[in-house]
Length: 245
Image (cartoon, rainbow, N blue to C red; front, top):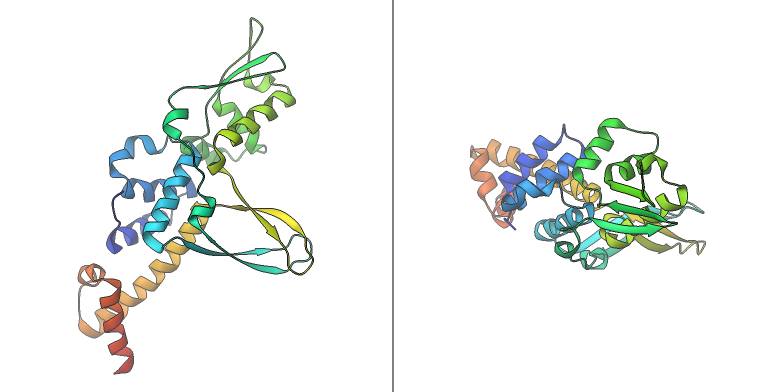
């Protein structure tokens, strides 16, 4: 993984402002994994998110703090966990090289896992049934006996079985955190999306960085490049001097 500099991160954040969340993810990963640019969009979502977790660790560390609201009483919960707590152990090299198969109710289904190309199509189309849309994208072939069927002809039982199998094979694609409300003892599963979380962190970081560049450039007359090339400690020391002067 290529270590991202402050200048590269700021550039990614700037370009990403006008992009979809799927494209934001690809911007981050193309910079962090330049040798895999041609395959990133075709990676299963779980593999993509696994790489985003690795990028997050490199940028901001392993500890994560998030918030959640109790579904029952509305109590606000602070969540503290580590990237390792939500990093699934999946060998994607083993699973993705070949198409996946499932037999349910005499239906033989050949399918693949959803990827970023599928999510971009979903974001562009905005269908009423997102799951059905993705399922149709990912089903390669369906047969019942000698008859070939369209993906839209799948019985609900078979469609649910395929989606369940996808979740089993690629657990990183949909991370859920088990929570208990301390106020009412309600238990529930809260989804956690590393892409949204990381982009929010990157936005907060970029806004702080722009402010730091503005202050240092205004006081010392240094160009943006020189300020961004400084270590965080060096920038902090200069900012401390300005505050104390």
